[in-house]
Amino acid sequence: MQLSQQLVLVTGGARGLGKRIVKAFASQGARVVINYHQSHQAAQQLVETHGPDRALAVQGDVTDPAQVTAIFKTAQHHFNAPITTVVNNALMDFSFNGDARPHPTDIRWEHFEAQLAGSVRGALNTVQAALPGMRDQAFGRIINIGTNLFQHPVVPYHDYTAAKAALLSLTRTLATDLGQHQITVNMVSGGLLQTTDASAATPDEVFDLIASSTPLRKATTPEEFADAIMFFASPWARAVTGQNLVVDGGLVMN
Image (tube, rainbow, N blue to C red; front, side):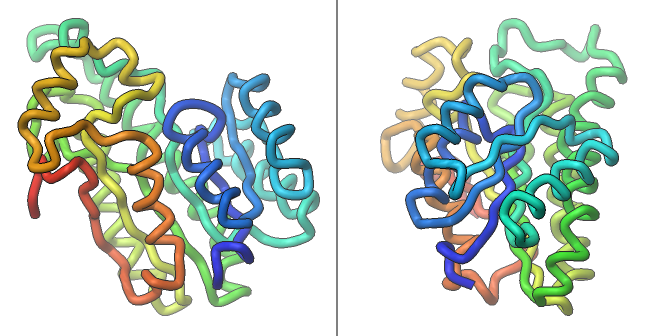
């Protein structure tokens, strides 16, 4: 299915990386469902930019199965079509500030529960809601957002990194189960992106250090990261599933 024919759900799509992902899909003619939790005004601004025939803002907490089901029903009613493509981008409240992160001596299991709920439970909820429509079409694209930190923990964000590692496992097991329905499941993993809401607290010297450590000698931007997501949704990736593509300027090489 061409990008222009797809109906795409981007969770956490109103701000930061999610906003760039929405813009990338919209630029290719796709219709986009912008899920947001609290950022109503930002989501509506995106709808105004792209028009109600191409974009729809829907509030919902992805950790709540009932709210996720409502998102899918609202989208189908608005566009008269099922969602074909899901980008699991929503991030529970988190700031990439190494100085303020919980350390091993004081981190609590509740930190892990919050990140697991956002990354793994949220993705499971959207996948389960998407499956009926994807099976009926014999087409589906599920793209999960990961991190290079579980391969190269330059800053040990224990809770966030553990949740994303679990999401990679879910990505691969879902790919194995859903491939028979022509549904692909992949992950795109970034390093520290310059700049999103989550990385706004990161000091400039950290970005400079990361840039100097990459072959490209630059920090990756949200726009560059979104380009890789477009690949997995496109026909060019129709035979690719269960993969984790690291997009960080070559800091981590698989």
